[in-house]
Length: 330
Image (cartoon, one colour):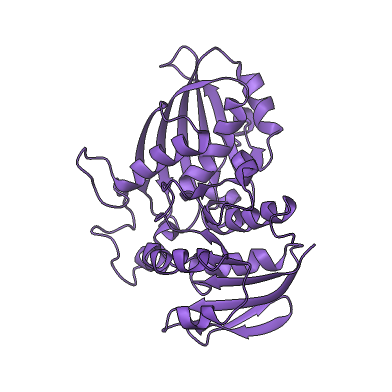
């Protein structure tokens, strides 16, 4: 297996530091690794595989000098816009954690367990989906492989870490990142509103789900809510299926799907919660039951660590899948 030359832009942020941590613990063979940050964080100490590195301020001039195979972008949409095409034009694969390219035709939108087979040598731009989309699509795909899905209704409960460091500081009372206090409160708005009074976050979930499932006729609705917890998103999902499938069958489908852990025992009051999903790689699924609204409906409650599977872990798993598929083999 070829040893890779890797760079991480945004290596000192919440997602970037998780990428560093997770990547260090993989079996991916790395020849050289480079850590980039903003000017403010330049010089920050980073430990990686028993070696000490220091972050450098990101610039095209610095990147131009490096022989790179793949770059993780983890510093927001503006940074992705600034660097992605520049890197791709040099024949460097890009794994982008921002939303900037997700719905572009030339960008793959990948959850490795769901559609990792789409990764090929010719696709240089790979986008990480929205954090809530990632954790939702694992159980949805597990079910969709057995029966067609006709409608999806999402209600999310998203932690402040989804807003980055400023979200966490707002919960701790150090600053006011949101228009309203988040402590002891719920804010039924994530991102800005568009013309139909849905938010951009809600539209992201809707559109990304359709793209990943390759079903643009699917009926989907979403409501996204910011909640006063530091980490781990929860999503309540209602599915209308084309035919009736028993709860027992649904549980079997979920249990055998890679990346899912079923936590569902009402008699023992066992169900997914942020306090048990934190720092876990698996997506936890529970409260599995029939819908009272749809004849062929099923309801799920899904919780995952949004900084891990919802961002950094999924990005690293994309690279693992690329290696597995021989994309870097000369």
